[in-house]
Structure formats: structure tokens, C-alpha cells
Length: 299
Image (cartoon, rainbow, N blue to C red; front, side, top):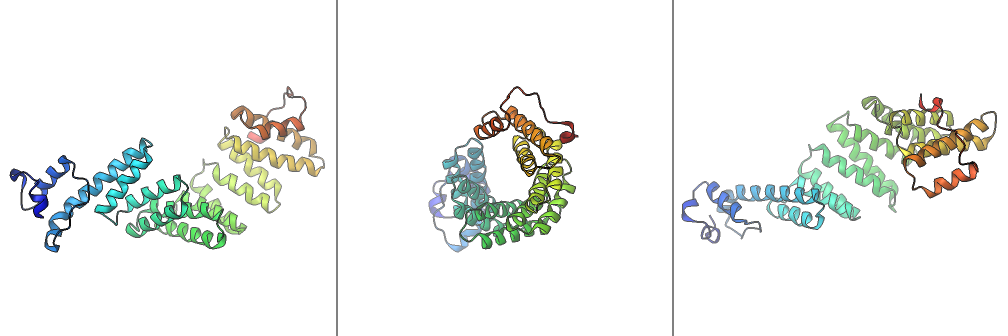
């Protein structure tokens, strides 16, 4: 054992296997990087490095739960000092980087996490989600989006029925305008999670982008049935009904009333929506009108 370390350990705790010394060092709070040692000593110190890395990860996770993000980042960095290939430490640092808006650093950590632990689907999904979000504002949008697609496909290679991967992949294809692919993978997600509203909301936006408004409306209604207290879904359904009302035709009045009903319900759920309130005021100058979300939208 390194003489600098050994000198700090009581004689009663010095053993050839290093484990008693390890227990003493942990209790004494030796959390900094260990001094350099000869190659022959590395095997003895490996358990100590592993234990310290795990301890720092646990400490970082507790600090994250307490929202002490700066201290958590320091703990995960300490963990990497003991184990540079810790996928958990890299993934956690990626989440902290993403929280502060540093997407490039987050993606770099997620890539390192996937490289360190290639069988961990969570790391692959974190990488894919970050790439998809980054593509929204990237100057290299198509390239970053393609990387996101490949990351989601990698996650699906680990678990072909991953709901999160299918939803993310559907969003990527929608973002790229590949409508048929978006429909195919999102329908698979809807089959896997039959009580989830998200797939139907995505399907609705794809149908709407293709001009298939009746199909879009049907998907929004299904999404609202599954998640009736989501104001965003009510707003989306109202917006689409407003489009139908402005197109005219025999359904004009009915579509306008449906739009108002959904806007009202959205405001009941989340009152602080000034833009929605103003839209509703322009549509209906009589705020006490008793129109509500009609049965056809909910059944």
C-alpha cells in the first residue's frame, strides 16, 4: 500500500487485502483523489477507488434530490476522479448541464455514459432526447436530428418496445416531415401504452400537418378522453375547431362552439393564460354563455 496512505491508517486496520484499511479511510472521510502510486499498488487500491466513486455518486444523487445542483456536480466530478468510466456519473452530470442550458456539454456527457455502459437504455434515451431538443435550435438541424434518430434506434435495439424511444422517434420524424414514419412508430407507441394521451396528440399534429383535419380532430378527442385535465390538449383541439369554423361550411357554427367550449375548459384548468382568454373574448363577447365541452368531444 502507498506509504503516504498507510501512515495515516491505524496499525490495527492494516491488512493485506486492503478492505479493513478501506473501511477506515471511508469513515475518516478521505474523499479527495488518492496520491499517485506505483503500478504494483494499483490492484490493492482499486477497491478503494470503486468504493469512493460509488460513495460520491450516492452523495451527488442525494444533493440532486435536495436541488443542491452545484454541490451535486462537484460530487459527480469527484466520482469521475476515482472512476473515469462511470456511466452513472457522466449521465448525472449531463442532466445537470442540461438543467443549466449547456446542451453541448450535456450531450458530451451522455455520449460518454453510453460508451461506458452501452447496455444501459437510460443513457441512450437521455442522449437521444437531448439531441432531439438540441435540433430545434441548432444551425445543423438535419445533422443533429439524424443523430437523435440513430440514438433512439439504438435504444430500441436494447428494448424494441421502449415507449419513450418510440415517442421520441415519432417526434423526430414529425420534425423532419417524414409523416409516414412518424405515424408508424407513434401507432406502435399507442399500442404499447394504451392509456397514454401523448401518442394521440402526436398523431393529431401529423394528420393536421397533412391536411387531414377530421382525423386530427378524432385523435385530439381521444387524447382528451385519456387526459381530460390537460389544458394544452384542450387548447390544441380548440385551435383546430377554430380552423374548421373559419373554413365555413355546414359545420361552421358547431366548430366555433366547440372551440369556445375547449378554451373555457382550458382556462378552468389553468386560469393564467392571457392569450387564450383574449381569443375567447373575441370569439364570445358573452362570457356567461353556458356552452361546455360537448359529449361528442369526450365520449
